[in-house]
Image 1 (cartoon, rainbow, N blue to C red):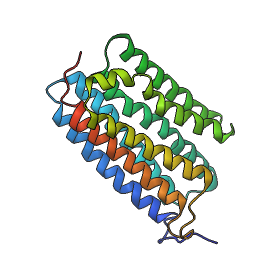
Image 2: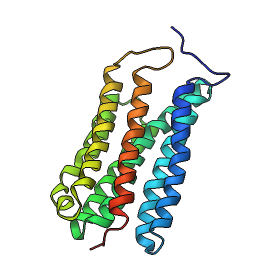
Image 3: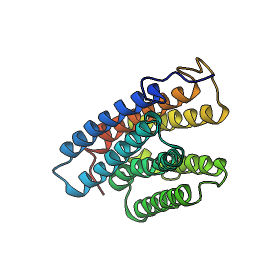
Image 4: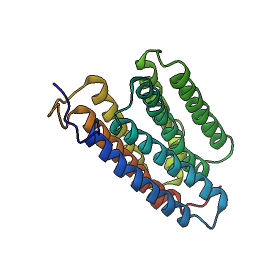
Length: 221
């Protein structure tokens, strides 16, 4: 059964969803930068998060919308999957930089960015590696936040931690649906893959609100 198209757009729903998310991410980036302009290092950490979101959603929108030729479609798919690593590391950056301190801060940042770099390298140069390896790495990276959780609980309110965990649940649920290819709602228009995209956007919204409301104003130690 062929998927419904719109003009030359291959997956219009996915393209529109992440196209809108890319625009929203750009607005979020500017908002966070303005909110933290009084502290340059803090602002840079916020920009890292905003840029990673813009990069992921822009790449995903282009990949799912444009009817790429086979070779370019493969390249865009690699880039699209690589951006997940970038977003995970970008999300950690303002949280770890502004909430954590000392060796825990730098160890967390080094680990997540090192893992992201390794994951991107694998996706770009060794794309034939089993897909389950990347999915496992995405999940491990995301839930590594459990390690510094005691420190986060010391410095952040229950609302902040709830948003952090909620975002993780959205992302993880989306990944599970993508792997199991369920639910098959309306395969030609809106199915498990579109639900995955909605859940990813929901995860980003939860983490943006956490960073805006709780991380941006917190005193660094």
